[in-house]
Image (spheres, rainbow over the protein chains, first blue to last red):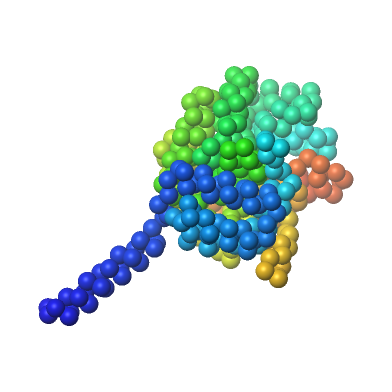
Length: 94
Length: 291
C-alpha cells in the first residue's frame, strides 16, 4: 500500500467511526437529562410553538449531546404534549 | 391461568355497566389506580368491597400514574412512595406498576408522562426508581409502555429501554396494546413489528382500551393523531393485537379492560363496554385455553 492509498484508507476508517458514533445512543449524564426534562416541561408549559421548542432546545449548549434526538422531535406530537400539560401541569413555585 | 379483569373506576356509570359482569362472575381480577382514592373522591362502599374481595383472592393489582420514575429529580417521589407503601400494607396487591416516562423535573410537574430520550442514563434512573418501588412495597413491580412518543427514536427506543430496566430489577411489563397501537399509527410503523422490540417474556399484565383521534396543527398543517383517552370501545385492530400477542407472553396473568367511568353513561356505551369485555374473554379462552 503506497502513502496515498494509506491516507485514503485512514480517511475511510475515520468516516466509518464517525458514522458509528452517529448511530450510538446519545452519551448524556444525569445533569444533561435533567436539563432536558426541565427545559422541555418549561417550554411546553409556556405554550411555545413546536418550532420554537425545538429551536430553544437545539440552541441550549448544555443539551448538545441530545441534539440529534431533539432534531427528531415531531411537531404534531409536541402540540399533543403541550395540550396534555396545559390541562394537567402545575408548578409548585406558583 | 390467564385472568380477565377490569380497571376499577369510582363513578356510578362504571358500577352500573360492570355490575352484570360482576354478577355473572366473569371478572377474574381487578386493577386499582390507587391515586384516584387519594384525592377528594374517596372510594364508595361498593368499590371498597370489591377491593377487599379481590385483594383477599390475590387478584388485586395496583397501578400508579404520578411517580414519574424516569425523572432525574422528582422531589415528590419519596412522599409518593411512602403513600404507596401504606396502601400495600393496607391491602395485598399481586403487583404494583407505574408508567414509563417522566412528568416531573424539579418543581415543574407536567401532570402527564412524557417519553425520555433512550440511553444508559435513562436506564440508570429508571432502574433506581423501580428498584426503590420494589423495596418499599415488597411486591412485584412493573412498568407500562407509554402511548405518547415525541419522535420515531422514542418509539424504537422504548422497548429496549424497558427491557434493560425490567431485567435489572426483575420487574414485569404491563403491555398496553392501545398505547402500542397509538405509537404505531402515529408514526406509520407496523404494530406487530414493534411488539418484537418489547420483552414479551416479561409481560404479566396486558391493558386494552379505546381512544380517540385528534388533529393537532403544526407548521401550517393538521394531521390525525391517535390519543389514549380511554373513552371509547376497543378498536378491532387492538383486539387483533391481543389475539396475536397472547401466545408470545408465557408469563401473562391478567388482561385488563380500561374505560373511564364517566364515559359509560347510557345503555349503548355500557353495552359496548360489556361486549368488549366478553370479546377479550373469548380471545383469552381461544388463545390460552382458559380464562
